[in-house]
Length: 424
Image (cartoon, rainbow, N blue to C red; front, side, top):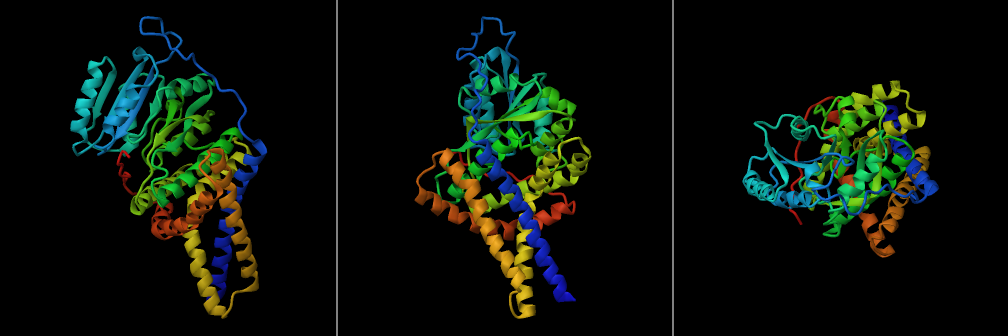
């Protein structure tokens, strides 16, 4: 009886992994079917009106920069935000500073310099970190009535023309709740870990985000490098901090309220990847727990909505993909026990493992090779070297984060832990 239960665990865990693989193969199929985006993006004039001309056609934009103990990057992100190509009379910058170290002292002087240059820059300090990043964004929003809100994390640098180009697309679509830009990585080639992360992130943006946006399926706001329409945020109930993925939570609530999102491969913003394995693990654990928390919160409303069956199923699988880590560990442990109990590997399990291996290769190559070529990352040899490290990284994450993900699925609450930034 016990051995039969072990075999059942093997079957169920493999079935779950096949379902998640099906989600990625769906993305690969549509990436091939849709081909490169051919639509011409909306544009604003290259030369925006100078300060002494009427600006009635250009809305006020609030740029929010949430910061917590980021002394190495706070000056840089403020300087980049100040350089954005948007009329100063219609641009407000908020540094949402929850820091407890010397970041705030650095920020005071950086903000003062920009204010002396005539920019509308506010240094917003809270007495506590309640709600973490979502709480900071919410507090800053209450201090402004700007109809559009751009969000840039502390380690992200937007090129000067990013806001103008992104706002053009958002203004052209009145039902778009938000716009997300692709993220490029300034330290993507730093070491084997950042190269592996960049490969996975390229697949996320060039395949997953692109396909879901073009298919009309809800896709992620990545927490930075994007712009929100205030009306959509307010209609959806505003920022909520009952999950660790406040951005995904808000996205799904705006879709449930009848809005949609826009994704742009270009213009992109530039950020920083974790350079140490332990920092990467902490970041991935936070994201994984956040996904599970959002699934617990919103799966029922999603299935009760009038979304298409495709949107419901794909969103469900996307939210559940983080379960691959504990499920992978469970399947390995159960397979070992099954072999020990039977004295051999069951023929049906051997067949399923062959399918599993084929599926792993199909998903890995299908998701990453096209993105690698599209973004011109390098030659085939470099691709193979980088791609070979991804399965090992997944196994590491499974071992490191499985317990936390299971805890999140059971409703255990955890605090927001930031990923250290170096400014490289």
